[in-house]
Amino acid sequence: MLIFNPFDHVDRKNIIKRVAKLKRKKSSLTNDEISRILIRKKSRWCAAAGALTALPGAVPVLGTLVAIIAGTVLDITAMGFFITELILEIAAAHNRDLDKEGTAREAVWVLVSAVGAGAASKGLTGMTVRRLSGRAFNRLIEQALLALGIRASQRTILRIIPVIGMFIAGGVNLYTCNKVGDYVIKYYSENSYADKWDGETIEAEVIARGE
Image 1 (cartoon, rainbow, N blue to C red):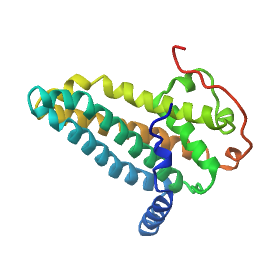
Image 2: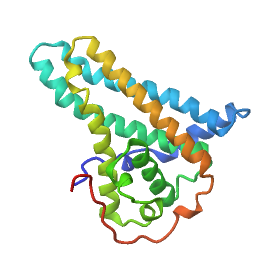
Image 3: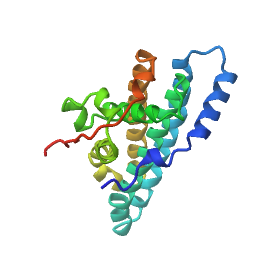
């Protein structure tokens, strides 16, 4: 069951206004260059989230438990939100209409592909994603968030190192955000037409890796 769907919490209207303002201010820049500015800003937020959620690790015993368990959960949630927001910002920078349902579905596909979720490696195509019905669509988002979680868990033990753990957690988040951003720019640069993402939904099953 999907507990947190970042796509339900992102303020799309605010993203539209924010990106439009940036494009007016930097009118001489290309869509990709605008996107690079967005990535730099968002990567700082991701780094801050990693550092702050690792902060309790500086307190012996109790702080260690908080940093490992609660800190990791909060870090994953924050990263899910920030990266989702970044994808939609880059989509807007490449002239996607965020008010269209198809744009959100396309963004989910970009997220799944960027973080290497299991569904993407099992042959699930963008054509199928754009037509998934409710439950299967949520399952796909679950897989993307799980993929982010796996990356976070690989460095969980490092969060408990006082001070250094904060820099490590922040640095990994910074790197992850930049890598995802690179993929997202490449996708939207090479796929300039969004109409193909609007259509009817179908019933389909998303199978997680290992099932």
